Image (cartoon, rainbow, N blue to C red):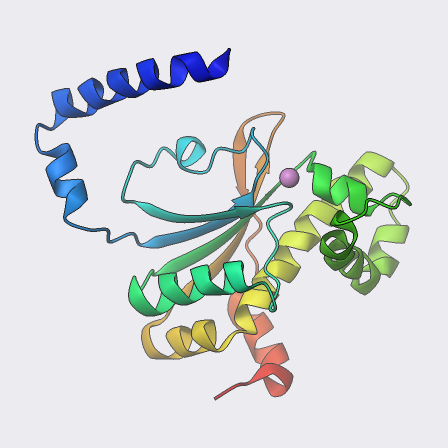
Length: 208
Ligand code: CO
């Protein structure tokens, strides 16, 4: 049973941290100053800090099903607001992953109850990129591409917020789109043209 091990593991972890830095927890108690906000999927295989090799204090994390940034999601919007306005992170990453169950579910015709309105946001991404996706014959390639396009659209959703627009203008905040390849462990930078997108959409989404 996994829970039996958790507290034992925790004791080992404490010893491990103290052996490399005796003041580790004292320093942690003094506050946080992360440079990065990571928005990723809740999937148990995509482990945020662990896959980036980062430790406590280095990254502010928000995870939900299929790494969505939805403007009416009070949870995600509060995380973005706090990270950008108060922690003053320098980078925001939206990290998707291949074999994402949320993205797969959105490609299928099924009534999934309470998940329907959440997954509808991914179906909207499909609709926006319908032409490109319908030209892909191989189902797996189509699925991978939708994962990538979903990351791109969530980056755009970040750019639609006043917090991100202000921080971009005032201090050069950057938004990045990544995909974690579950089959190889590799983190892929989609190299989304943040400034190009900003130029394109600001006519409509400009807030201040
Ligand atoms: Co996922």
